[in-house]
Length: 116
Image (cartoon, rainbow, N blue to C red; front, side, top):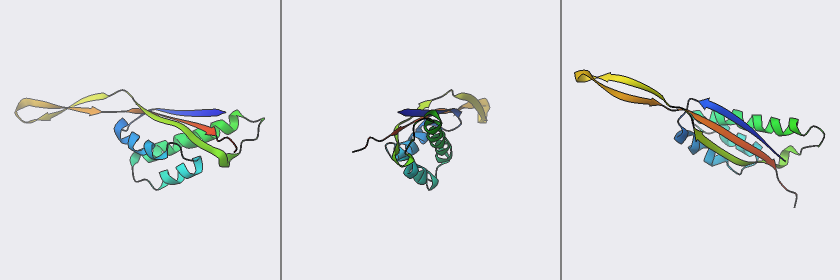
């Protein structure tokens, strides 16, 4: 039993978001949310929303079966690159520097651990 949550077009560089998501991969959901609460990165707030959405998805997906929330863990979590907005900054002597505003897609999969 597995559920997922995906956040698309998040205005954070994929490289910076991967630094945060590597810290929570494989952790229990409650522990991952605690880690994200105390992570001093902008991506932690967005990733926390996705983890909470994935937890809510697995609970609502299995209404007929009782889901033990203490056994939920992050089975897969990854960050893909989204579209890049290209901007230019004028500099001296009539030149321009390219500015790349990167975006990312965050996906989190939550599963229930096997007993024993």
